[in-house]
Length: 331
Image 1 (cartoon, rainbow, N blue to C red):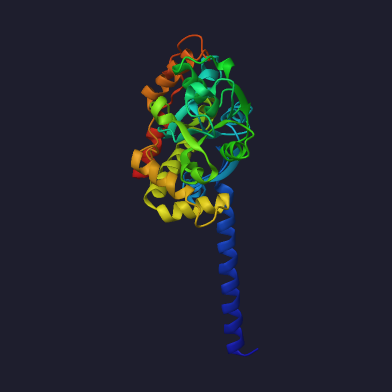
Image 2: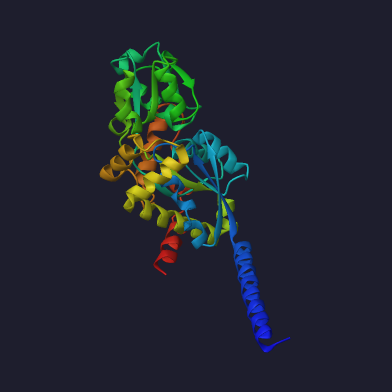
């Protein structure tokens, strides 16, 4: 064999060896990623915020993120307590009730301290007109159901004077309202730009009648936080980094929303709720825990009869995970 052929063969083996070594390193790196199971509500007009963490931010923190979608907050809590999730993003209302009754649930951050929810209707022109009508909400204990109870209580309307219909997620409830299956529905305000053409009107806005009710918090269990504190901190670091990016990159966030929901480019809903969230600071990219708002939620739960007595909210709040996450991001 000539010297030239030997050199060519050597080069080829070197290239193959380098490729094999790269593959081995990538494989080892992938194996080192720790699985984190994260639950979120079904993707809708603001999905770009909730799903941005899956766009490489978790991997940068050494986690392999597995995201699971649920129709209601109550289902998220059930999955968490059953050990099927490591954390989830959902309404804290139902979880405060569960914690007050001894459930192992911990709030480690809040992504949406503001409420985008509204109550839309067809012929109903006032809250008093809801008597005898059917309102599309979520299952008992879900955010839409709790908000409806708060509104009725504030207007001295007995809850049993209104028919509560548990209807899937926001999109399902909106469709039920458009189809005249129900008289009113609790949905995200992303539907405001499209409601007029359907002959709908705004009956009430949650940020008016429940201004201190936090929409979404990140929650886990004491068991997970005790056995995997470092992983939990890395998860929170990924969440904060993702939200910081999402809120400062409108086009990318709206594209992710459309990819998740298959909404068309000219659909105004994603842009509407993005701009509303930024303008009103309804979304907090720093994922702080507004304990005062959690206490407000508890007061509302007592007023509506969902809780019989006060509960020490601080017992279900863990500030340490977020503090560790911030240090990770600083480094």
